Length: 361
Length: 43
Image (cartoon, rainbow over all chains, first blue to last red; front, side, top):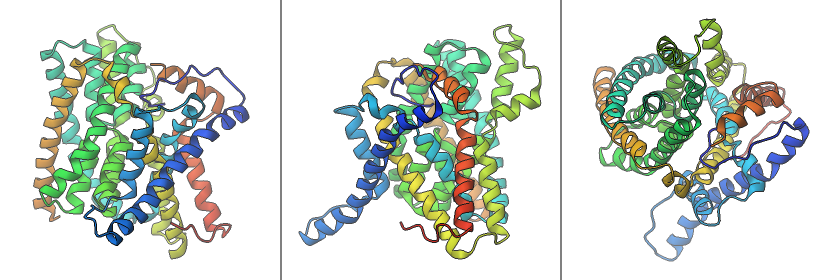
């Protein structure tokens, strides 16, 4: 599980027992998320009633801020940690359900544009991060992990690559910490830049999906801008996630050719194993929605269910981000990640601006 | 960090990957809504 909190080594346990173990943490996610929703509704009204000038803060940001406050002050007690780690489950279930808000034609059209941009972004990001890692004298496998993390999909890609190229746990921890720290920063910087540049929902969503590394942070960064931008960010990020198998396979072959990783036998099986299955779920729900399998009311219910799942995810993003833990990982991987992320963000912004002119968004 | 060990253990215990369980749960929820078990999900 992708997490900045050091998770305890779980001993194999009965599924029922494991299910019970996640209950407190899931309840904490729900409580933090719901508190964010209540704050969104009530703070604005209260400020208005008292003639205060107060910005309209969305539930997404409230949920993340409350989570951050808990994680970085009192910390997340052990009893809640397994449940908090389920935020990734809610994220993926939420993305599958979000498929109901996309008609297949839109997915193919927007996904096609995203796919072309994703291919360019991945190639440039990997090349740049590799050069940067070498320039900073990072260990080669740590450089590979940072490159995959920034190019494809953050923590999941790092974990998938770590196994395939037989990188050290330490390298993986460095890369994960850097990607998560930068993801947390992007939550606050991306919406500000988007508003400053007056980006349309379409352009911003595409940019967030292309440039923010971790899926949870990309979803949150999109939703912080607008509902429409959130949808687009998820679509662009999902397209990026779909590429994970190919990139990991390429790295596995590269490191195996240098005699520093196992040779990949069945490449098709390898690709299937690494392929994010929630992408297929998203497409299936989108196809069903396109062919009117669901009524209008049912589609609204599915979209709302997706929002609830994302609410738990946003709470989890805050709760699992512990800046003290990240600081322990050292400055150099973070510096390489930060420089790389800034360059990738600027490059993808230019890419989106170019595509916007070409496709008119 | 013990991230990998945890995910491997989890996978053995839970039969499917987290990804696949998320898809199963979402599809099940969609089917229950389609079947009319849940008619409205408030937001």
